[in-house]
Image (cartoon, rainbow, N blue to C red):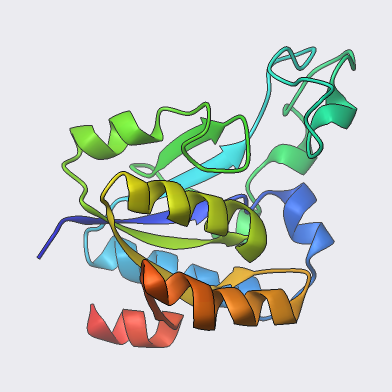
Length: 183
């Protein structure tokens, strides 16, 4: 079986607070615990920028509002990983600069160095980081699994269409419980 890693993407305070779901973090925590128990690398992917946001163009519709701001970028509580699913020693932290976990990060280097061939994707939002990362990872020839209830989106219908109709063309889609049981 291919060596796997669990990606926990964009589960930062600012993101979690925009997508309130009382069942989400406990379920994600179960997946993280199962990965650690199975000896799988847990890789946290967060969006972050340098002070002054030099990585952001005003043309970028998602992040452009930050361009030109002064002060620290990502040093405050809002950008920290939510404590309910916080990294532990040995987990890996990757900082990305755009929507995909690969964009502006060293994720590919980390995965190749660890001989990781299969990614298990979780994160917020299904239509953002999960979709973008899945597409890029598929193009990079990684095997893929998406934990449907380990992902969250503001629009339940968009989440449903992605996890039931779009993602299965490039990934296995399952639930946290079924994935944990298969460990």
